[in-house]
Length: 220
Ligand code: DX5
Ligand code: ZN
Image (cartoon, rainbow, N blue to C red; front, side, top):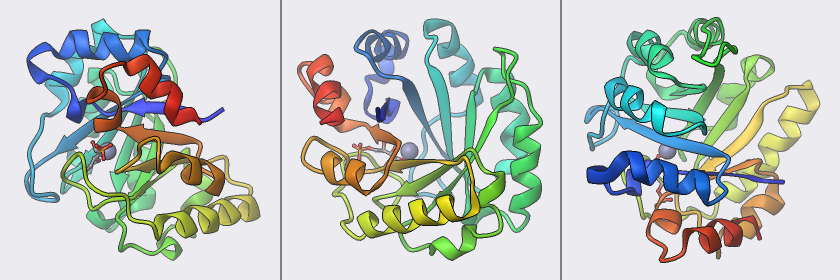
């Protein structure tokens, strides 16, 4: 079954602990944590100290999406703060192989290896992943240009998911496919059909009057 990862970017930051607990109670499997630095993307959110503060409020799998320049400088801090998975953008570092293995060598606060993921902007071709795919736990395909919640899903992502699924099967990678941006009950069925394993949803979850129903609706 597809996993749902609500994005706290659309949560009420004044009540963040409660907002995190709320989606766990509503049946989400992962928590998507959007870290933005105002450089790689034109928006600024929060860093590892906020992750550390919300960690005691939830047992959810903490999926940290780093939309930052120079992500290698932040890996230690996110590991110590309680990340279960760290996702970095392929557009940000020349030495992705080293960075990915650096992430995988870290141990989470649960005592497990931290999972490593790579994210691709809509304009970044899949071929850039080819050599890395066997090493990855996760590939995050952006289905909007990163930086903001509540944007419109880019339809070309569907073919990218299908092609990525074929690449994963061909090389025998265990990487899961996550899709992020513009996911709602209208766009989710095609994304699942194309081969996604994990759906990120910000406004479709936190903007809904009934989040239990909203999460169920995303599963189709
Ligand atoms: C966009 C972020 C997304 C965002 C998704 O830059 O990476 O995770 O929160 O928000 P929605 O689901 O509203 O498009
Ligand atoms: Zn995200």
